[in-house]
Image (cartoon, rainbow over all chains, first blue to last red; front, top):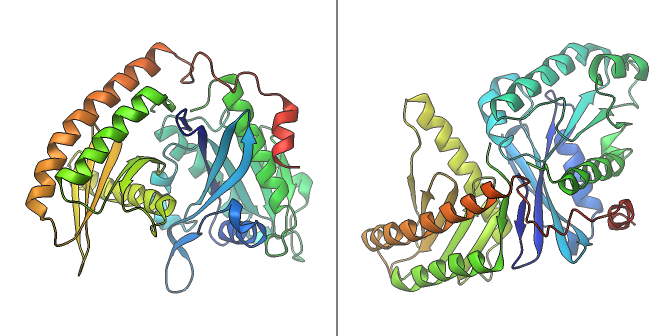
Length: 197
Length: 162
């Protein structure tokens, strides 16, 4: 659910990074934070455990510049990926405008990817959204590791909708901005259609 | 699922006016109005030195988490939260199930006074937001009739990233 303020001429959209535990959601945000001009971003907030696992969410506000005289702001959130934090994941999806599904490309995480995308479908529908229609981008992370599943297989298992998908190595930034740009575009196009939210 | 929140100048000024008056009447340091998804709607008082964007996001997270707790014990929501600090305190309340009113105050005020004033301002805000919702309901797109976004081109979007 975007928030349009005609008085301050601002539009705010919410993007959520979703995916199984340790797939690299927080790493995506950290890289974006590191590489963005300080004037264009706010503080990054991470509500994490002592062992740096996301406990509730990470939050990063970004300004992308003007569109037709309106400042466009994107609020990026991650969810906690670990299975038992499901109640928290549901809360973070409230009011989402676009979702980035970050998959872990390693063979042994394939089951976790599938479980997580099914969990995303369920949690979205509880909030009144549909995984088959919401702006969605998929990122296949950890492509630099030796034991990865082929792109073809990943696409077949996770990208039934054939949405934009990117290969990534998040700690090095490979594919990170491509993913962000793609989801921001989809959200804005949805807004143009007037069906946003 | 709530429709897009669209605030036009007129309603924005109405809402901001209520917030401004609340700062004075409650002797507060700062008052914020945040939407349940974590977006700051408006603020008044000594906001300098406060990261308002982070505050909005964390407040919404806080409300969402306590809302989850409420459901677990069979409550609809906890409409008021209060956090007491050494110097400053935060009073958080949910207005009309959709926006969050945050009042930060110190020893110059008291919890009793804040609660009393928040109650009155809350009623005014609830009325205004009900009207905003009615307006949004009449316009099914959730965007204004003269939405500036209906006309955006692929180039406009592309330019954001150049």
